[in-house]
Image (tube, rainbow, N blue to C red):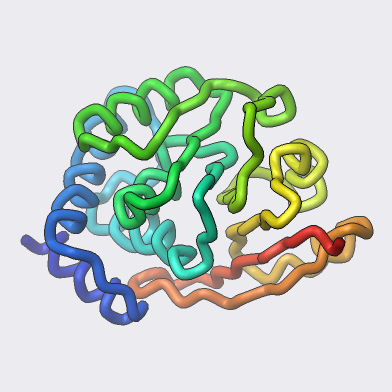
Length: 207
């Protein structure tokens, strides 16, 4: 009950509202992550109370900026932010991409246990991933520097698509190193319960 209240309060402060069945599945995902984390070390965050702001609320902070129908989570790790976003937006199609077998195995199990039908998990390096269709939104959270991320994944972005890059402090140097061809917009994010700077960089092809 304590975790549920913390999640609801955080979402309310962020101006987000999700139906009770989605809240329940978000907390089930957290419990699953905590359980697997004991054996597989999927995330450095051990305390479920800390997982609410650092994993759930942080992931859901980009919810208003998603455009679909196809969304790619680059370097998803333990399914973050892809699984929380997919729970909140069942109308969009998500692909969770990671080269780590241990982490994709967890993500696949989580999809099965949560009954998520709008998600595919792919174990592959991003630069070697060549799907039949490109993506409308590409999300990177703690993946790489912005220039390196663009170099590895720009081939996956649809002509009208855009990148949402989740960062801590304002990434001044990384943005300065972005080559021509993209326009950038930076938004400061406030995550309730997270006493740290969070920024999101929206990168869209300049054409």
